[in-house]
Amino acid sequence: MRERARVSRTLLSEAQWIALEKLYAAGRRGIPYSGTGYHGAGTWQVIRQLRDHDPPLAREVTRLDPEHETTHYLVIITEAGERFYEKHRRLYHALYPPR
Image (cartoon, rainbow, N blue to C red; front, top):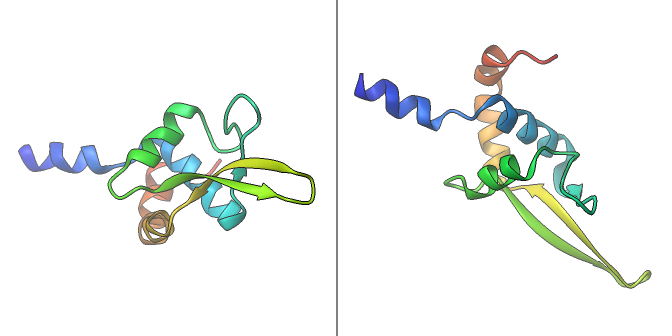
C-alpha cells in the first residue's frame, strides 16, 4: 500500500501532461506569455507545478529582441522535461489518450 501511494505522487496530472506535450511540441522556441499567462501551455498553476517539479520539467525565460527593443517572456521545456516526455510518452498516452 505504501509503495502505491509513492508511485501515484510521481505521476503527472492530465493537465500537467497536456502542458508538457505542448511544451515539447514548441521546443526551444517556447510558448509566449500572453499578458495574462502562458495560455498556450496551460494554467499558471500547471506551469508552476512543472517548473517546481524535481527535476524541473519547464522553466521561464526572457529573450531580448534588440531590433524592436522588446523583451519576450516565454515558458520552455527543460532538457529534463524532454527526457521525461520521451521516456514516459507511451505510459501517459495510455493513461490520458490524445483527444
